[in-house]
Length: 499
Ligand code: NAD
Image (cartoon, rainbow, N blue to C red; front, side):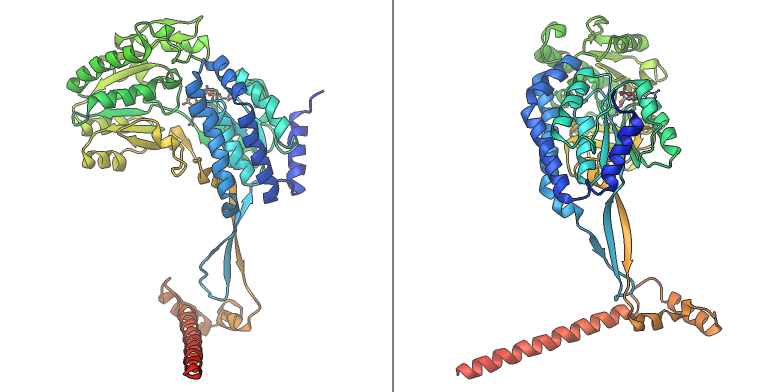
C-alpha cells in the first residue's frame, strides 16, 4: 500500500528535522542529480510534452528542458555564495548583526499543466538549494509529464526528502490538509484562493503564481512588420496556453488595419494555408477547454481563423475585431489562440482601460517613444513587462517573475527562487563588554529623570551615526596611521641600512 499523505509529509519532516537537507554538500549533490535526470531523460520529457500538448520539439527543448537544465547550472554555480550568512552594519559598533539564510522546512510545490516540467521543477530546484524538503505535486491535467516526473524523480533524488504526489482535485484537497512550512502554487486565481484558505489554517506562507488578462498596447511609432511577429509569437507558442501570453491588443483603428493585414501574412508564412496541418502548433490541453474557447468567438468579428475541433483539441490562430469591452472574451482569461483587438484613442486611453481591470500578470508596450513607455511603467501596476517584445522578461534570471493583486503574490527565478524558500533570520551578537553595559544603563530600572534626559538627548541626535560610530572611525584611523608610521619607519630604516 502506498504511504498516506500524512506519512509522506512526516517522513519528509523527520528527514528535515534530522538535518539531512541542511548540509550544503547534500543540496549540491541533489541538484547535480537533478541536472543529470534532465540530461539523461531529455527524450522522455520531450515525448511526454508531445503527448500532453503536442508540444513541438523545439518549444519543448527551449522552454522546458533547456530551461530547467540551465536553472540547475545557474544555482550550482552560485550556491556557495547564496548560503553564506550576511553581516550588516550595527548601530553599536561592538555588536555584530548577522542574517542567517534558513530553510522553511517541508514545502509543497504545486505545478501547472501548460509548461508542466518547468513550472513544477524550477521552484523545486530553488527549494532544494535553500535546504528544504519538498513535496512535489505535478498537474494531473498533463498526465504524461506528471508520470515522467513521478517515475524519474525517485530514481535520482532522495526519496524521503523529495516525494512526488500525483492526482487531481480530491488528492490535492487531501494533501492541502497537511501542515507545510511553505506552499508554492502555480495555476488559476480561483484555485489560488482555495490554496490560500488551506494555508491559512497553519499560517503557512505562500507564493501564488496566478493568471489574468495581459494587455498589449501598440502605437503608430513602431515597425509593425516586426511588432506583429513578436506579438504573434508570444500569443501562439503553446497555442496561447501561456500565462503571460498577450491576452488582448489595444490600438487605434489605423494601427489595427495594418496589424490584421500583416498578421494574415505572418500566420500563413509560419503555419501554411491550413494551420491544423502545421507541426509547429500545439494542441489545447483538453476538449472542454476548446468548448470554452469556442464560446468567445461571438464576442466580436472573426477576421482571421475561427475554426476549431473539440475531438482533436484544436483551434486555429484567431483574431477578433469589433470586440465589446464587457464581452466574454474580455472578461475571462483567454488561455488559447484567440487574440481580440480593442480600439483606443491613444496611450492615455489605453492606460485608463487597463487600470479599470484587475492587475495583469504581464504588460506589453510597443512604442518607440521613451516617455510613453515610462508612462506605462509608472502608471500601470502589473506583475512584469516587456517593452517592444513579448514573453522575454520571464526568461531573465536577473528579474523576479511573479504577479500582483489578482495575478498573484511573491516572485521567483534565478536567485529570487532561493530567496522565496529562505527565511532570513536576524541575529544580533553582543559581547560582555562592560563599556556597552555602561553606555546602555538607561534601560535598567530604577527609571530616573536623569536616565530619561539621557534617552531624550540620544533620540534628539536622530537616527544618524552615534558618537560610538565616530569613535570607531577615529580609532580605526589612529590605528592605520600608527601602522602607516611603522611601515614608513621600517622602509626608511631599511633603505638607510642599504645606503
Ligand atoms: P488550476 O488552478 O485549475 O489547477 C491547478 C491544480 O490545482 C490542478 O492540477 C489541481 O490539482 C488543483 N486543483 C484544481 N481545482 C482544485 C480544487 N477545487 N481544490 C484543490 N485543488 C484543486 O489551474 P490550471 O488550469 O492548471 O492553470 C491555468 C491557470 O494558471 C491560468 O489562469 C494561468 O494563467 C495560470 N498560470 C499561471 C502561471 C504563472 O506563472 N503565473 C503559469 C501557468 C499558469
